[in-house]
Image 1 (cartoon, one colour):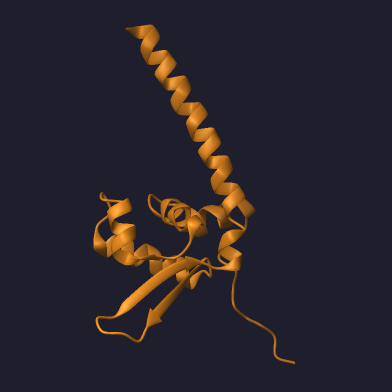
Image 2: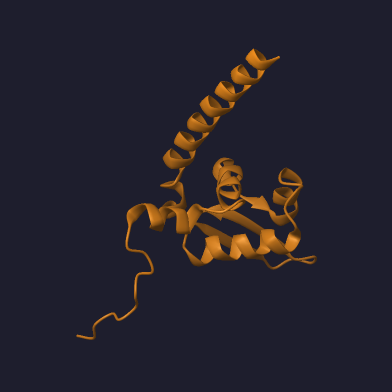
Length: 117
């Protein structure tokens, strides 16, 4: 039996999580795909600050890591959709927790800003 010699690039579970979903756009892409498949243009409209090049790069990384699946339909003009894989669905509780934490943080910051006024 041949031994798998691929190296796991992470030593720590948190490092692995951040490596897969970290960065400015990956978590947002995953969040937008929670309700189903979307085309590239739809994702771009939902995230107007991301450049097409960066969106393409992030989608490719998410696809390579098995979180997102790319479907190409044989029509003219070409139709491509992105959707979460089963593995990608397992990230949703993490995104939900991030959303709750972020909302609490923003609420706290707004309260502090109002006290200063």
